[in-house]
Length: 218
Ligand code: BG6
Ligand code: MG
Image 1: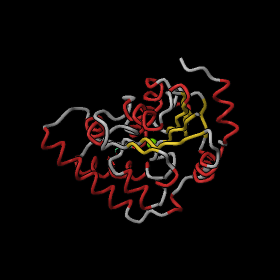
Image 2: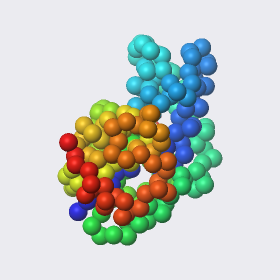
Image 3: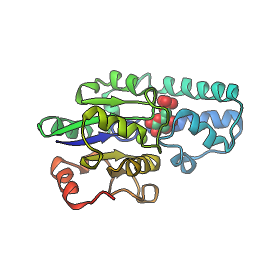
Image 4: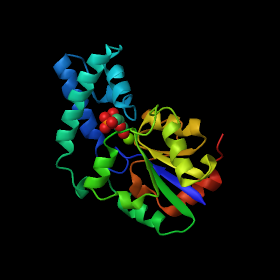
């Protein structure tokens, strides 16, 4: 048995842009400089860690709560209208292909506490043998906890798993978990990945099997 673990935001669904918009709007409100380049470092982090990274310092707990809640309200507002057209190219085909073979299992592992809402809105939960989100872990990415928990739920060893990630923190988490990683996006943001593709339309089961043979987990 082998496993595939997918990140959600920016890998399966085009929601990374809504997280960015939410942070950008909060940054404007707080008069903090923020742009897409700075946002790369926030991808995959928990809401709390993202806020601290955006600010460049750790504010009081009450401020953390207040500002995180504001960003989350913006995000919830943006995702209210999402539908299956927001699913990224190649995702559904790959999820269906993996689901159709008996010797592969697939999981979703997202730092987001809103992952369940997104999966539900788009009817995606049925594809996964296991789901782990930000509500279930103490440490989000780059800590390996999310991926190790997903591996445990699948009952598959880390070295028999490939992770698909669009965030540098996610590639790092996969490495720390002892898993292979495919980066979705640009090399400059995803060094450390075993393979980098534009989106999941460039991946099929044959390529996944090849990756298991050609790459060694260190
Ligand atoms: C990750 C996103 O999936 O979830 C981050 O890449 C986001 O951008 C994080 O900050 C936490 O999400 P949420 O929905 O719990 O605020
Ligand atoms: Mg992501």
